[in-house]
Length: 344
Ligand code: TYM
Image 1 (tube, helix red, strand yellow):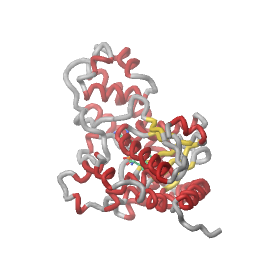
Image 2 (tube, rainbow, N blue to C red; image 1 turned 30 degrees about the horizontal axis):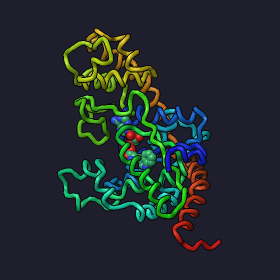
Image 3 (cartoon, rainbow, N blue to C red; image 1 turned 90 degrees about the vertical axis):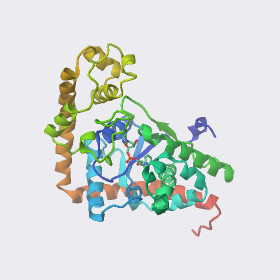
Image 4 (cartoon, protein in one colour; image 1 turned 60 degrees about the horizontal axis):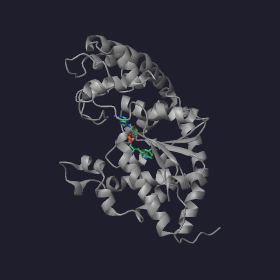
């Protein structure tokens, strides 16, 4: 089935974030900010804190609860409105885990071993000693998406391979059971910040798991910390080029220009038009000011929301009930198609 065949499905956006620690500027620009934009385009949007994914590696139970609430707060302050979007945590909707089992029986083990994220996470370690969940992770991700018949999935560049796998799993299910039951979801990898890089190494992704805190901006960083991290960001000594092409071989400069463009809702060409020929002594303070003006209200509001965890739990509970209403009938149909007796 081609993307064209998705026409019979209601346009629906699904995406998720792992609540496994500090959210970064990469999560904000590559995901959260775009989630709010999709919602405001009037498409049906479903957003999930994927706590079942988080436990594929060890999580302190109390910390995981706090991080899940904190991630929910980050969605809300980034503009995801729980009245417009469905916002919930994965483990409250059991259809995800059940669908994942069904898809585990459709997907092939070899497909899982080929995932670069699995290879990266087990690199240099004893892969045999990693959790079985870590290997099956992409199948649960496919279940997240397909249990809602989602047609569009906004993500950063690093999730592209997982999305391709989701499409393969959907297509194999449809083929094996002679049906067009699942849409083939389209990845939405758009904008200037689909791959925000480390501030210390322009060839590495900005990541919450990088041992160096200076490599990333956390959404909970203070204004001073944000400014200091940008000031100390690794760059080359040249001024910014006069055209975007001049950024090609300059990973660090390109990264900072992309971050500026994404924060300012402009394009790298606009940024170069303003700062081309100027040195980092001028550009970095301007970037730091812009970042602080956009991010400081986020960390302030997150702290305010975190003061009332019961309200966050209420929002997630309500979101889960709405999510269940969509997911359960789709799960029931999948079970039926696969030959399970359903007593009504
Ligand atoms: P996670 O939690 O690692 O990241 C959440 C989202 O943030 C994006 N992102 C970035 N974008 C740009 N630059 C960066 N440096 C950067 N770092 C992270 C990610 O691409 C992602 O969009 N497997 C997923 C979670 C997931 C999911 C899903 C996503 C589970 N089920 C279903 C979509 C649909 C993950 O680990 O994302």
